[in-house]
Image 1: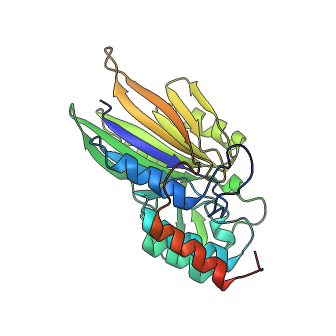
Image 2: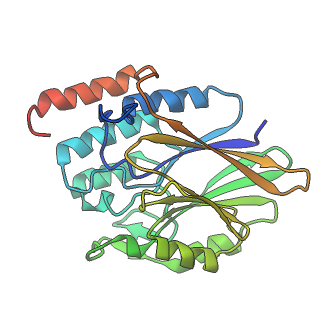
Image 3: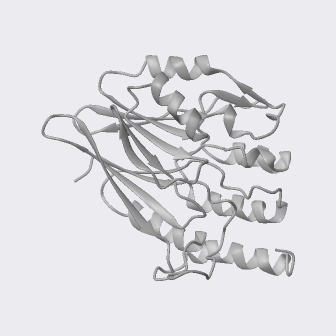
Length: 266
């Protein structure tokens, strides 16, 4: 049995509904919510993390408001805002920060403090620590005025990790920024990579890197084991989000209300 299971999504891009395209059609937060609920029912401790670019890249306020409503229902234990969140209306962005457990230890937004580090005690006297890192390179244009980056805050968290800790970073940034991060913080055990819409699963030195895919088409399930050599091992599974699952009725209501209210606009 794994010590802990991490559920990871990223780059959902405001795709709240199944695309009804492809074979099989993939995506839909009403189906994704069911998968997450099923995993949470299992006996292993479960953490659900979203790595950002959850909102659409365009400021479609009504769509992104519906996505924010759904986020309240699926309740990630940790949410790292990406560049696409900061393109949105400031009122909605402020609501996002107030209503979610925000990760991101290398920046601050407006008057909000730096993001928290999630800690979970595991069997075998081990501690899971999950931090967030938003790369400034994520922003293709000017960085919003309300964001202040501070690398020193993340450096201190990394330097002060304990000997028994398993250090996970939710990283939002480009491939080039990711390479620099791995070089700067080589003892990171696991990186959950958002922004580039990658399906990468790769080991670089001591670090395992797992991409978050895109558009809510897959739920990435990462299970942590300790091998016979006492080293951390990760098992990665991707479950396709398809219509074979039941819809979450509460999430479905939000989607249907969005369509009713914004008929022919999206």
